[in-house]
Length: 488
Image (cartoon, rainbow, N blue to C red; front, side, top):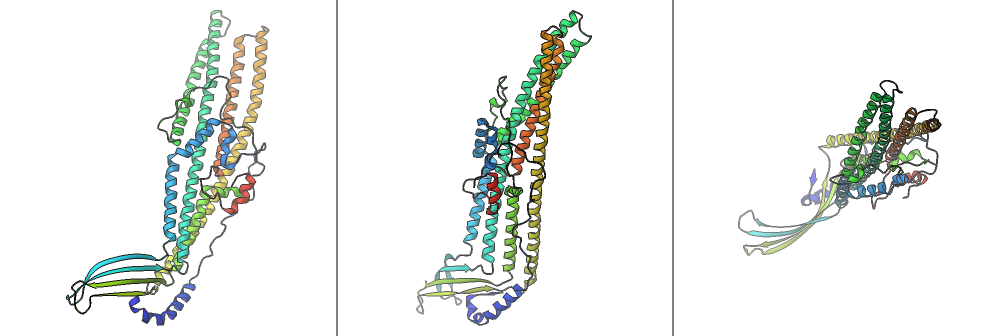
């Protein structure tokens, strides 16, 4: 039911009764308690934490590798990645929409000009008016609209940060895959040299009839297997190079990415020892998906508040200044101006049931958002726990393979000593040398897996640089951030 200024004098006498009735009926609608802090994070991790030197900063964790080339690639991706550029525009859109919502409940003015003919078709008037409408946004309507818009901005910020986390992690992972493929090809080159030497010695042993039958064929087969094994790292390197080019916003990969490294050069992308002095489980709340889920809860809360505000009268103040000019120059009047101002009150009467159902529907949406927040938190905890467990397992694997390499080195040195003393042939020591190369390759693979588990851990914790101008994380996470050594 809508009341306009033309009948406001009649309505104003009954307005207190209408508003009291609307207030009482609105307050009679039961509400659902709104969540404040959401589900609690676990008190501690169940997986073991790495022990060693201090851990890197959550926002620049890839610098632990100490590789300037990797640092440059991450900086380039943050500056040129297309997904990040799209997220930036989405964030600007959300902020502009929030600004629009902020002024929705302020007075708005409009102008109008038209010709009007009277009912007798005798005179024609030119009407010009300035109109004002001010919707007051009472009973929480204004606050709810602004809260929903701010929640959209927070969700857009979280989505953009989630893309930033994924981009950084993918750049590091593909760079590590490139380095791993390069190391594997170097190991295969060493095995190929051993295979060539084994074939040459097998041919000599065959001609001198000092070797076993089939040694030459076995050496050729072994060499063919080594050549065939090159296909996998070559394919992995090519895929990683293409993926890295897309992440950097390039049309083609850099040719230097797939070039073999010089023999004996230090391995790039090696992860040094590290550890955590403290890794609070509440740090999981800084994950972008958890922050997006929290924003969804706040938006659902605003939806409940807006639906409840529609149970109350909607009050607006309208005003106009009308100027009328008689175009036909009638003698009765030539021009006049009429000011008017008054309230417009929309009282929910005949659609009360629909509005109550809308409140119930928004409360169900709020409950779903709360469950979604809990699901996001549990999924984040599970992902971080899995990364910690994988990191610990790969560390144990690398340590065990280090012992295998040490034993293989002793065996190779013993075989070389026997060959130098003439107690064994060079051909007999090739197997020990090949086992050493294979053990070193296995250890390098374990170290690569450990590095990838490290990447997965910091991705699970939401590690990435914060966008310029963003206020880091909510204040309730400040203690967790400080104990991790993350700068605000």
